[in-house]
Image 1 (tube, rainbow, N blue to C red):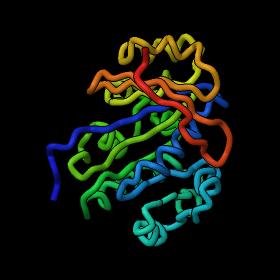
Image 2 (tube, rainbow, N blue to C red):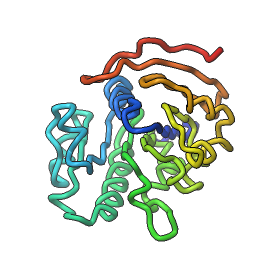
Image 3 (cartoon, rainbow, N blue to C red):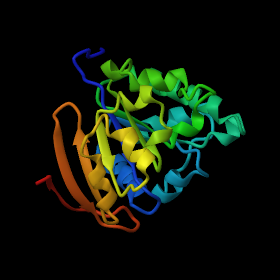
Image 4 (cartoon, rainbow, N blue to C red):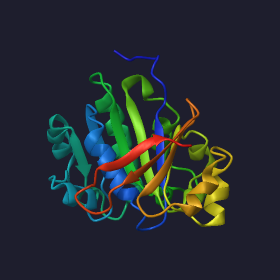
Length: 225
């Protein structure tokens, strides 16, 4: 049964290359313990390779992967170069699967901005997740990027948690500042350190992630002084 009391949960992780943002995302996917993780694994199956999980290459394989709680879709066998269409299908399918049972689920796509149309809008099926249309079924959104400025304001405005790694580009800091006024501190963060801001609670945390692979543990986390 849908639970309409559930709140939207949209996390955007950003930072320069090598700042540990991808390691953070994978760490979150590993440790969040959701009912299922839906991963749009479009970058040469990077996530499935790093996690040593067999990628799903067909709709049937996606279904077979659901009980494992990790569905890493390699979109190329089904869709070839039509990644926009692949993402639309996967987002719609993830929503349908989420309706089958209770518990939180995570929909993850790296660099979502690459799948926007000429108006810089994400596929409608993904925006439905971000806007909370699927929240009653526990479906949450997770993304990571080097450049949050490339995300349409319709997406940025719906982010409930910003996870900021080192970022020095003025355009990126400016894009986040209306939603997290303390984002400028990200320009001085060393590798592995992050600031997380929750819009709903107005809570700000700082933390340090151990660099390297497999995903390092959180060395330190606490309220920002």
